Image (tube, rainbow over all chains, first blue to last red; front, top):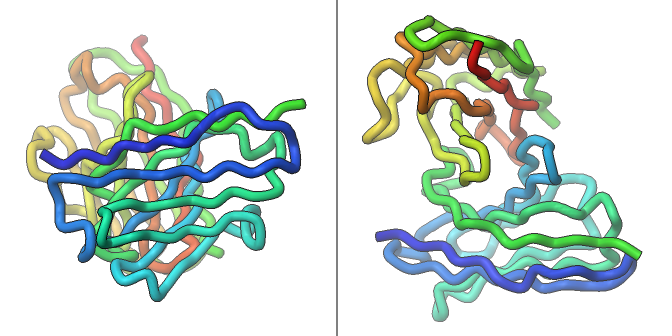
Length: 119
Length: 107
């Protein structure tokens, strides 16, 4: 079965960095579009970033542009999110998610990793 | 960026009721509209894709309709396990965007 397992979350101070990872199995990772979606405590879903199957197309929500970088290693079936200059408003559960393309539904989600930014 | 607006943001209903949630996009998105269900403490799951297509394994009491800017999710014969929050999402263009959610509570 498909598994997306996130790791790398934690508690950091404003301005610090974190690198999230998502290990994928049970699917053809190298032909999958991948996303990061976050959810602040008690709030709705917010799409954060997308990367095309080959890594050659990326997109970000405005609030993280210039601070977050999405990447992937298809040889290791792993997705990454480098988060720099973290802010308190970045505090959320971060989900790794998959879709066939950027323009189709998200059909698989990980269980999430919690990121807390607090002084 | 395309804004997605859901209404109502919450509603109370009884088991057996028919529930309708609407989603409006700030510009036409054809049928690039997906619906997700998120139960408390759980991961979202897709119910409807491309506006009206039922995801495999999802009960037929869920249905979706619409195109352009106006969409609806209908739950007929509401069941106890349907009490959850429902989100629409446009996949027409990046940045992808979700609606604010519609929480369906027990009356």
